[in-house]
Image (cartoon, rainbow, N blue to C red; front, side, top):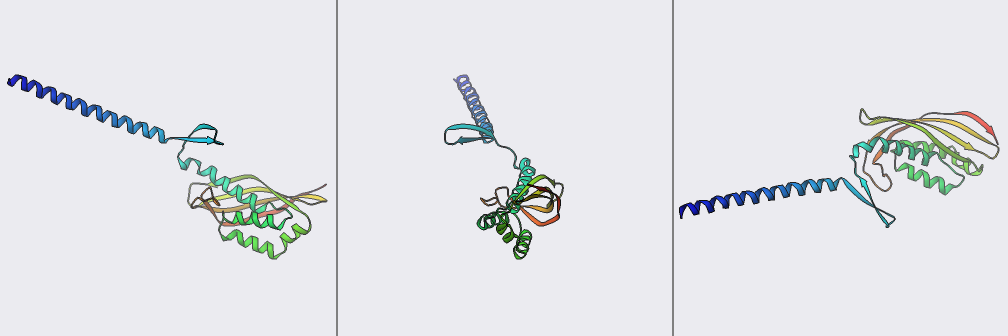
Length: 199
């Protein structure tokens, strides 16, 4: 009787240990599976197909986002058409990406009648960003932008070099600032004529 009781107790302990091991392994496997699934993002393409995109560490994309942020600002701020509403709309969107330093340039150009001359002269101005050099070794990040301005008149096209610099700080992402940066201390270093092409 005592031997049978010991055997039952032994098998009971073995069974409990086995159950505990299975439960532990199941929890470990479930946790690993959940972690792997967190690395995947499923995207609906126009509500039709389900695509899989791998999520990445946010810090890996910051240099790309910084360059795109600066490029977008220059496109909005320096691309002008002879339409007051378009100018004001673009500048307003650009000012969400920068501190008040760019507003100073906008105010100065407005007071000098630059935008009025664009409108009355039926002039288009385009900017083409050649490169953006960012230094991510120290915060705030320093950036220098090299671009070309094309001022398109009825009689000619003036090509100008444009070099600007600024500091980049991290900020909150929003619909108006999707990259989560703010440009500080925006400064135009060079803006001179390169050539004039007759049309």
